Amino acid sequence: MSTTEDVVPMVPKVPSSLTNAVIGPLLIGSYVNCIAWGLVLGQMWTYYTRFSHERGWIRNLVIFIFCIDCLAICDECATLYLYSVTHWNDPAYLSVQGPTYTVYVVTQCLGVASMHAFLIARYQILSKKLYITIPLAAVASLAFIGQILLMWSINVFKNLEDRPKLTTYAYLYLASAAAADVLVAIALSFELVRVKSTFRRTRSIVRRLLVSAITTGSVTATIAILALTTFIARPSTNLAVGFGFCIGRMCSLTVMLNLNMRKPEGQSRVSNQVNVTTENTIPLDSGFNFTQGRNDGIPAAEHNIVHVDNKDARDGDSYDGRYDSKGSSTII
Image (cartoon, rainbow, N blue to C red; front, side):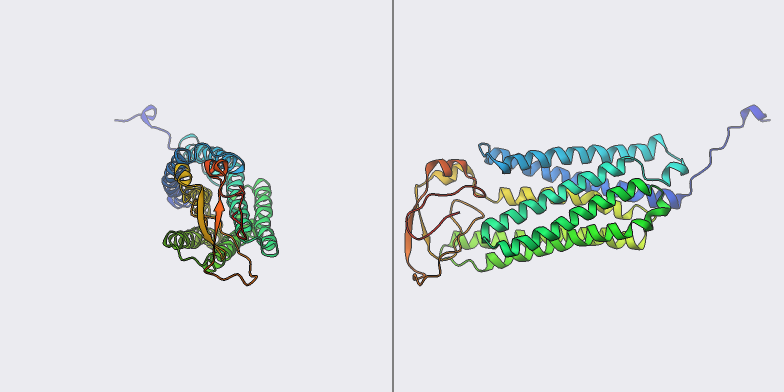
């Protein structure tokens, strides 16, 4: 016969609906995010093996992205540990947004801003159209401001039941981020479509860049739209945060995929002379840049010999390097 001493005190059970709404999306989002992080690490390994001697702002950007992603992964692991171990079955903790949410928003903000800065700078180098670059930068800046305001509001309204008060800032950030992704993809695609070349390799590069611009822009924009939709529909859950976990890694993956589309350093030293046309051309030693050409009546079939400096070819930096040229063509 049992006695009162044998009775184990019952711990208040948290409703399964609450754990599913709070922990479930975070768990699924962390799984997908870890897979994306593995892809990013693979692309970073490829980058450092193929472009080990690259210097300048691109290399610093890759290091910055790596540090931000490491911090984000650690923060997500800490968030799950606090929810599922330290404060397990604690309804009071499950109903608030802990300090790890602030780190999550900061890392996501820096990751999205890094991708936008990279793609917009790339577009400016490709097109030299400042009147388009400025509006693109303005939309990206609006997304950055929206995320700063969202971070502030999370610290002010910490309870999940206060999530509807964050709708304005979440809409400003996610809608602006999605718009910036789509607009940059359209701008890059428009410039690449205008490229004309008789070289099969150049046409292949153009096709790959078009696919990259459309795919990466649509993927990040789709995730942002899904996060916004779920936040508006279910603000008191972490469904939007589950999608948000993946945004930062997809931005990093976008940057790394674009960087690794260039030719390896060793392949750019095959020859010191490259034949290019005076029309819009992608240099054969680069996966990115092309010249706008000069519309001054020079026949499209005319060719010039461009002498590529060995130092520039050795550096292989097609974003901020300038090739010395002779003739009417300009290689960027």
